[in-house]
Image (cartoon, rainbow, N blue to C red; front, side, top):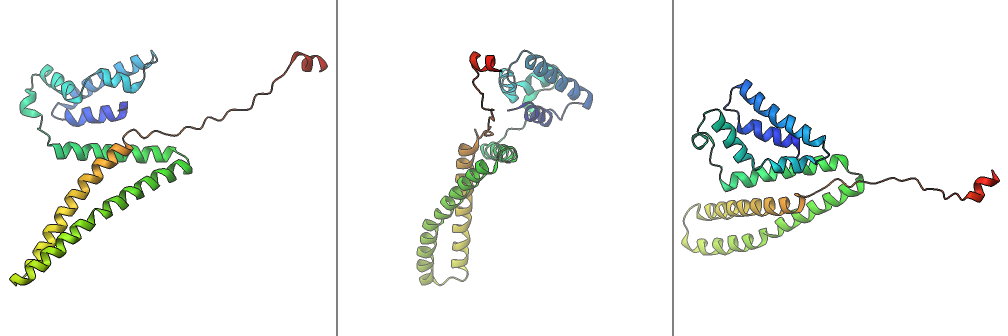
Length: 197
């Protein structure tokens, strides 16, 4: 997590504070990050050394006399997964904006593979839906096949979104900007060459 993401998360979690108190707390962390960056410590390492966002928020809320247990919302696993997914999407877009075309083509190719995989997951659901339709055709209840098809499609959508989110975050979580180091070829010069000049 970089400084910008860290500060944004901190602001989101501490919006209960007055604007002045929030600004004061954010300033403490910004100054500490800058101080440690001046000592050539990497931004990510500095932020990691602070601990988890949740612990930082609890500490700050306690400092201001606010009970963190009453204020902090209990986030569900699904909410956390989608929050992580959107962070990774933001990271992919950021990396792609800094990469060259060749690296971006690889990222797009990986995304296409993932989409094809998710599409292939639909096959068992089609088979299940057809099996259910054939069984329901004997019962002859109005709209039963339509309801069955809707249920199967909803289950497919939920499962495919969960699978897509998990695979996407694992594939692209540690995506980095491919840096091309352009170096000039050094000419070797000997003493004899210098003497000739």
